[in-house]
Image 1 (tube, helix red, strand yellow):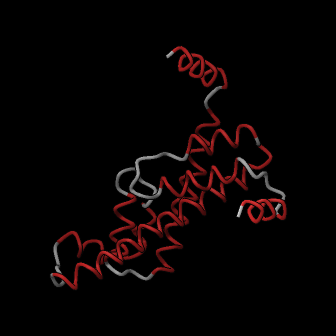
Image 2: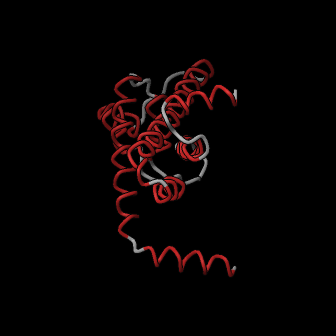
Length: 167
């Protein structure tokens, strides 16, 4: 497996250490685990500014696939739940169904986006439009967050690192 990943990264001319960390952190942060991927992405982009767009795309793909994993879990849980109880129809479900896959443009929101992806699977919203809207929302989030973090002066990051080292 390690050799296969090495060949993959060599083929695309990518380093084999940082980008997998960006991908994995982005994937995990899209699940219900409370992990943020922006610090790893920003750190990678800071060290490798020439790979800015590659890192953004890798993070977006990882985060989108993580969101689709949530979608799939929602679909599985719906299928399991219906075999036990039967369908339910409440106000929140109707609200989400009316908006459809477009609601996944908000899948990047902390604390709200991950359950939204689960809800999309639960509601059996079509996977391809969900994937597209989720990807657009997550790409815009990574572009915005990375750009905002680059506006912070380097001295702030150095001071923060010094302060954290004292702890």
